[in-house]
Image (tube, rainbow, N blue to C red; front, side):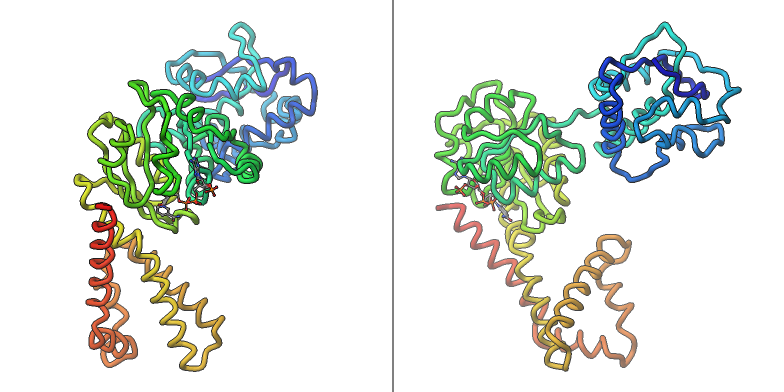
Length: 410
Ligand SMILES: NC(=O)c1ccc[n+]([C@@H]2O[C@H](COP(=O)([O-])OP(=O)(O)OC[C@H]3O[C@@H](n4cnc5c(N)ncnc54)[C@H](OP(=O)(O)O)[C@@H]3O)[C@@H](O)[C@H]2O)c1
C-alpha cells in the first residue's frame, strides 16, 4: 500500500492500494507507462490541468518511472496538505465504471482507507473527457470490429481506428486467407486474425461491426455460409460498385454501403455512405465513426449519389495526380529539376487544399486574393480558362460517375 499524495482535487479523493502485481517494480513500471501511452495528446501535464490549486507540477508524471512511492515522499510541497476524502460523485462512479479495467490493472480501489492516488484519478478523468469529446457527446465504448479481408483498406481503417481509440486491438478480429498477411497484421496492430470469415461474423454479435474489405468479385464467396440471422452485426461495405440490392441478395440486411478513396491509406480519405433499409437508426453514427478514422465521411440520402461520389472523390485523386504532374512538367519546362518541381507542385496542391478546408473563404475568393492586377497569377489562370480547364475537370467527374453507374448494373 502506498500514499501518493494528499492533494485536494476538486471533490474527488480516493483510497487506493496497489494490487499484488505492483509489489513487483517492473509491473508497476509497465502499468504506469500504459497509462501515459493511452493519453495520445502528448500533453505531459494533462492531469495538472484539472487541478485548480495552482501548483503546476501537480499530478505530473514525475513518477512515471513507476516508483509510486516517490510521489508521496519527494513532493515536499504536499507535506502539509490535508488528505482529501472520498466522495462517490456520480461522475466518479461513471468514470470508474468506464475505465475499470485499466485501473484494475495496476491498483485496487478501497473505500475505507485514506490513501489517495490523485494523479491516476485525474489522468482517468482527463482521458475520459478526451475520449468522450473525440467521440461526440456521451460515453462511447470502443467498437467491437471485424474485417473480412485484411488488405490495404483494412490496414488503413484499422490503423486509424486504433490510433484514435475508436477500436481496441483486443476487440478487433480480421479474417484473411494469406497466412503471411495475418502474421503481419497481428504484429503491426496486436489484433487477432483468423482464416475464417464465419468466426469474425459470429464473434462480433449484434453490437459489433464487420467491414467488408474484400474485392467485389469475391464478395459472394466471402459471405457464403455465414450466419446472418437477427443478431447480425452491422456490415459496412467498402466494396466499389456493389449495390445495396446486391448486398441484400448476398443475405445482408443490416448493412451500409460506403465509397472511400485511396488517401484513406494516409488518413486523409474522403468518403460517403448510405444506409440499407434494414439498418438501425443508430447505425449511421457507427458508420461515421468507422470511416472518420481515416478522413471525412458524409451521409447521403440516396444510393444513386454514391456514383457521383465515385466520380468526384473516389476517382478524384487521379485527377489531382495529373494536375501535380502537369504543374511539375511546367516547372521543368521552365528550368527546374524534376525533383524540385514535383515537390513544389505537390506541396502547392496540399497547401491550397488546406486553405480551402480550414478557411471561411470560397476557393474563388482565395484565388482572387492572389490574382493581383496585371500580375503573374492572373496570366496563368486566364490561360487555364482559355484552355477549358474547368470544363475538363467537370467532364472528368461526370464521365467517371457515368461509368460507375454502368458498372453497378453489371
Ligand atoms: N484501395 C482503395 O483505395 C479503395 C478505394 C475504394 C474502395 N475500395 C474497396 O475496398 C475493398 C478492398 O480493397 P483493398 O485495396 O483493401 O484490396 P486488397 O488489398 O486486395 O484486400 C483484399 C483482401 O481480401 C483478401 N481476400 C480475398 N478473398 C477473401 C475471402 N474470401 N475472405 C476474406 N478475405 C479475402 C485478399 O487476399 P488475397 O490477396 O489472397 O486475394 C486481400 O488480402 C475493395 O472492394 C475495393 O473496391 C478500395
